Image (cartoon, rainbow, N blue to C red; front, side, top):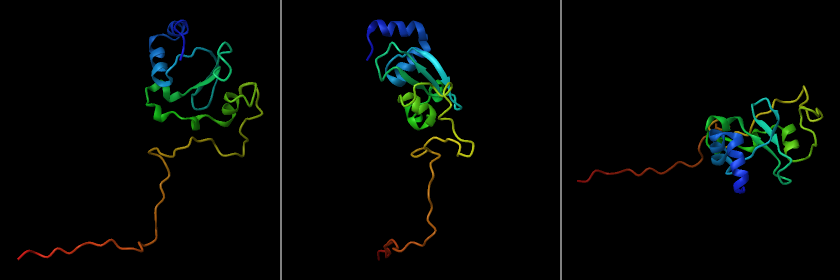
Length: 140
């Protein structure tokens, strides 16, 4: 929860639309310096005036389109930015290229489990147990 002066400062820095969107999506207002953007449009911010552990954050690309919170999750953050967000790396991937994806590697995709694009298996074996269907005799 933020203090009243910090909230007012956030309102003037962000503008009414972004201010309300942040309150709705993350329940707080955060103002910081844009550090970089990944290939999916997620924006990464840093504010060293914030307390440790709360001074780096991501603004998801889907957050700008008024999607629900369910469509924004941590699996949408690529590995190199995850390392920076969680302080495994001091410099962001825009400066330090040590975490860059290798050319032979598989392209990053988010975890689609639980969504409409999730992988669904299918069964090719016959059913071993047949369901019982009662035979209804006509009343006479």
